[in-house]
Length: 110
Image (cartoon, rainbow, N blue to C red):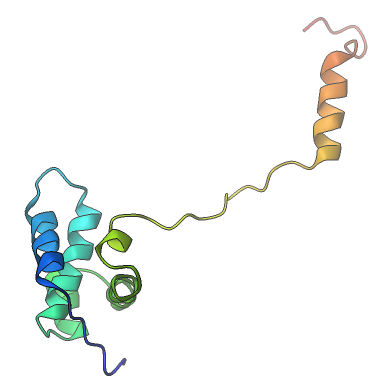
């Protein structure tokens, strides 16, 4: 269990977070993130936030930390992740290009 986590924000940030929660045209993931921060600022513990927001403990910790580091803007963007499939190497690319530019093998026509 983490101790000593205290989220404080300015009235401007609270207004922005409240607007995000109340906006019906915004993605739900942003609403959940804003609710986590608002509940944290209201002094609720991790387990209470988990119950209210319906998220895991690690999600609560993640968004508390992101807000403390980057503010409201950090909640409104996703971190970039590396591609799941690594790109082909130059040797493979050169081989494929050479095969497509040459004549077909054997008696194939397509």
